[in-house]
Length: 394
Ligand code: GDP
Ligand code: MN
Image (tube, rainbow, N blue to C red):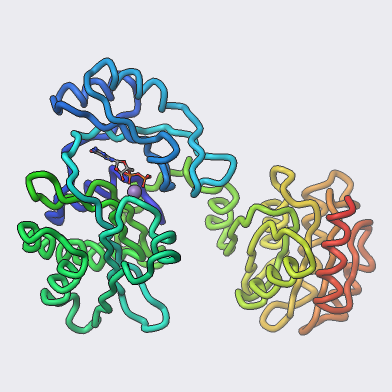
């Protein structure tokens, strides 16, 4: 789960990580009122969306007086901001962060993430801050330093100092940087984060070390023990289909394409996305209906896939183990009943590959059903090819 920058900074502050003074604003009047209260020679007006790259896209403005704060707030609120992380549709700005300006001497990058290979939290730091870290990693990988953290002892102070030296903090800021790094790690552990990224972390003209930007990501599986974080959820930033699916107990990820798929098992679902792509299709989603699919659950999955006209074709790829093929077939028939008035057609072609438990019963249910546009495929490969062909011809 993702939260906004201003929410992340409030959490950092609780852990003693230095952040600039500031407050969120939802209207132009609030923005001006916050700026007035801050009474800083430079006020930063920052668009709050769940995506980075705002600086380059014009979502971070420096105002020298209250009139400028008012103008920038007016310009940004309601604007669709398109950054390299939002996709072409962009994201609408509904909130701002109004902050006192900082006197930046140098920008750094600092991040914590779970490294799956070593099964440890890894800390990454670079003096090439303020720019996309992916770019630094590609062009100047020697500029990124790492410390792997032993879960039994946690981040050791010597590791924090070592990376601070490697990152080339000015001598006067090394101690502050070390303290900053250790506190940031306690945020990661204390809040069950999956990612913590400060870009830029800055050293000011006064040699203070502060987080100028903050991105916290939380482990969804641990949210049950952080109701205060769950409460920060901004549903307007989340995919409507993913939200509905989560409420219905379906593992659904919107991938933006037009060939939908409904699969049982995460591994098979990933393989299905791959094979659709391999045959020239654009997968609309990852969808694992799980092992306990009732006809109702299958019908819900169909509704989600078809919502908004995103899917131009659906590939049902089921290997019946715990799931029974007849229940899946009955679900498709049920879905047609719910979606179309007469129960005889689905709005897009549906290619079905069934294999495993009760496969004959499943196939028979579909054969006997009045639905016109269900096509049976003998194998996964045939099914993938067929659905991509149908979608690309449509
Ligand atoms: P992002 O582009 O979405 O990652 O947004 P950031 O919060 O990282 O801001 C982008 C850039 O704006 C930073 O790298 C800074 O160079 C600049 N910036 C942000 N806050 C301030 C500030 O208080 N003072 C100055 N001078 N620049 C700032
Ligand atoms: Mn940033």
